[in-house]
Image (cartoon, rainbow, N blue to C red; front, side, top):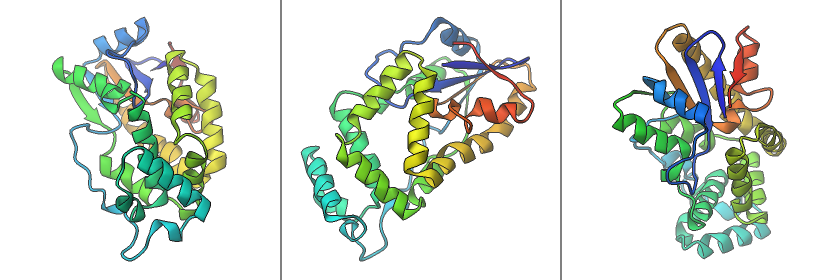
Length: 255
């Protein structure tokens, strides 16, 4: 899933944050764009540490106070099935509980963030002595998730535990990435907007908006540059192609 900013040496690659591919399988056009790039930007610095304090509930507050009994029962069942400590579940925010469940379910099934498209390309960029940049910090990502409206966090957790802790959704996303199926990501994004509109706006639209000045600055320079971002950041009306088009710029699909 590769786009090029028209008239520039700047490319944007849509990635997925965990896979079972070792090594990751890029299309020819994607591999060429990475190989030629001397400056590669990622969402975050993968060597960066993160403070998880914002993901905790206030002192003396507990997760069952925020969600229904049925949702907590289902959450606890998934949590313990994955071998996680039930005591830690009691003190975290609903949205973080949902993400932890999804992450551990995905890893238990053999898909790891270390094999994510972005993580593998970050390691390759380091080994090849490319210049590496990041668009934000891990702490900024955590802040968005931790400050999401509580009712949307609750809805997200209920959605995740009603399924298989998000594993089937992840497998669909990975299959779509392998097929470079952009329409799937548009449908998936629409479903996320319906489930948690404010949170999705912060995660996708606002972050894209924050990144655009850096993308445009690099596009004005001759240096071959590649931006590696999650595939959802390229989807729909709040995706980078559409937002750039609103500024008179064209992000053209290459692969």
